[in-house]
Length: 335
Ligand code: NAD
Ligand code: TDX
Image (cartoon, rainbow, N blue to C red):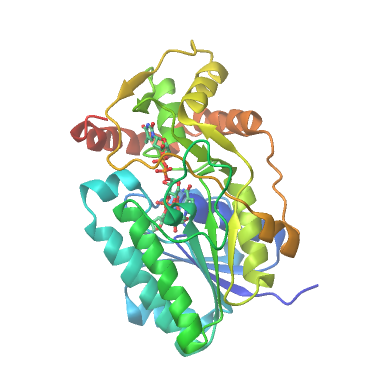
């Protein structure tokens, strides 16, 4: 069996980070140290029930260079999920995005450079901008960067820092850019959990604009498996796109949620569109599939969505405390 590693996972109390920690503790014998600031988006309860002898939780900021230096020095490899992650928040107040996404990534890169540790950087397909609805091409590893929002521009900037640290300082890093994730433990500010929890609360789902915008959905557990594989076997300096051929427009997603929850398919409202709203994302994940042999396990979106709805129905204590505050933030934008 492979030697046991100590993984430093930043943002491990967030949506994708907590799914990743659960995945790693199930699929390997590795030990995980989570570094998470527990912002509004982080929740310690998302790591409940995991084996305590293999998980260490540290509450702290990735911009804290002394703290990061000590933790990176003790780890075998670093997997960086922590970020400010929500586009709508970045339109209200960009500053935390610059701080965490750019300065935080810089702080981690300096530490992995000093300690010569392998680093995997989690990013998004939003760095590539958007596609026309009828564009036959999808995003690949060579698509030029063209981000639209404060969120995606700071993620793009963080990716470019990683590339520069690889080239100029020989840092042992890989990057992945994934499409839209869904699954358990996603904050109720995001599209799918917002609509599921609205319907549970008897509030009509809210569709931005006409609902024609397309997202390429992947289950968070498929993302986790890809990240684990790349962090172990990906080629240093390479970028891998992660996607599961899951393109759907927002209207179709809302209608599917309504149908699965026993409501009429037209029981939603149109609200003010997002400023600068990207039209379509779509990922070509050929490199990841052919080079590393990854394939998604959740190929049926409707079944994955039904499981996700069941999770939000069964875990109301996890999301109820955030719901009112989240909706109050949206009310300011008339969304
Ligand atoms: P999330 O907002 O649910 O979680 C982010 C986590 O990072 C939270 O636990 C938060 O407390 C923590 N954090 C924030 N600032 C921090 C700081 N300064 N120091 C330490 N911890 C801090 O986000 P998510 O949706 O799980 O996204 C995780 C990563 O995946 C991000 O890098 C995001 O860009 C990327 N990504 C997300 C998606 C998606 O669909 N959600 C798709 C592709 C890529
Ligand atoms: O109430 C809503 N109604 C609506 O129509 C919300 C919250 C969103 N939307 C639309 C906007 C998008 O077209 O749904 C789509 C998905 O919205 P979000 O969940 O906010 O995700 P998106 O902006 O696509 O970004 C997500 O995927 C890429 C993550 O939040 C990012 O962290 C990731 O990088």
